[in-house]
Length: 78
Image (cartoon, rainbow, N blue to C red; front, side):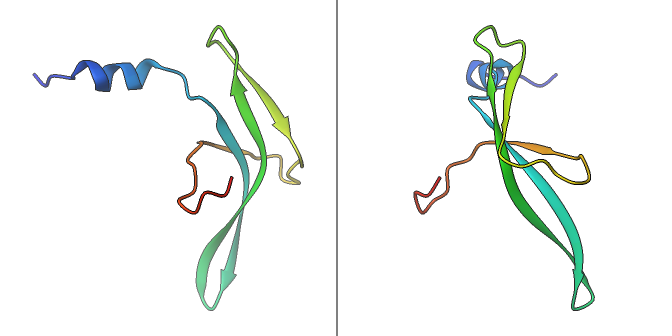
């Protein structure tokens, strides 16, 4: 049986501070399939941890959003 330390367990149960919303467009270029990630909004958790408020700056034409955990960029940009 594997053990999970307290730090790992708490990281798994704590809600994300925020999520970024992206529209991902796949396209072909030079015989390769590539993906363009366009940030279209942000999701913030409710205080009770049971939901999110999603703030969109654009709505994807295909209706699909990808939510990813926010990760600050290394160059300091937001």
